[in-house]
Amino acid sequence: MKRSQVRLCNRLGLHARAASRLVQTAARFDCQVWLTRDERRVNAKSIMGVLMLAAPVGTELTIECDGNDEDQALAMLEELVTDRFGEPE
Amino acid sequence: MTQLMLVCHQGVGEALVAAAEVIVDHPLAVTVVPVRYIDDPDRSGRCVARQLKRLGLTGPVLVLTDLPGATPHNTALQAASNADPPAPVVTGLNLPMLLRALNHLDVAPLELADMVEQGACRAIISGSRHEA
Image 1 (spheres, rainbow over the protein chains, first blue to last red):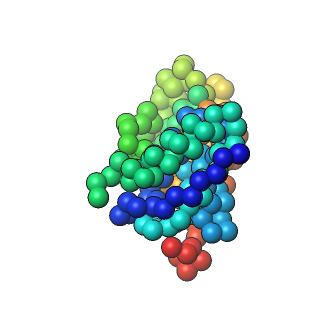
Image 2: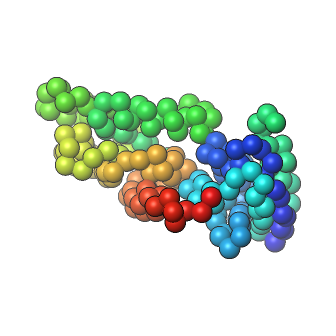
């Protein structure tokens, strides 16, 4: 299993469109993908799970990927978050 | 792939699909059948049945309606039960339900019906219990 901590840096945090992009990215990989905020851990391939994190800008999230393509999945998800989900600053 | 059909009061299904399209950031292949209060129920029923038949040619269908006991739901329920094969109907449509359905279109309609029901219910949370 591969794990990484990221901080949400886009202005709106993990809002609906950002959550959708994250879920669509996670779904491209076979590995299991989990997101954790504090004590809450959700399936990152579930749009409602991700939205339930209610994570605003500045939130620290842990991304965990477990499976054959975990390296690629983790790298892609980290890039998505650090790229502010493609949103302007 | 399961196909979605929304049978709702006029404006409700269209608005939910429009909101979902903004969220997922691409156009959605969701069939919306709006029902107006002035519509003849028989005509609405035929319209729903026609759309169900059309969709049924390309794959299984899950029907979502907005309000239990209301005309759109009753109309959908009747048409869906007469369809071949019958299509499951879930009511109480909200945006979380729609998003969950769109997220799991690879799941067969009956199982998806259970999933979206649970998803929609879980997304109803008193604000004070949902820490931001």
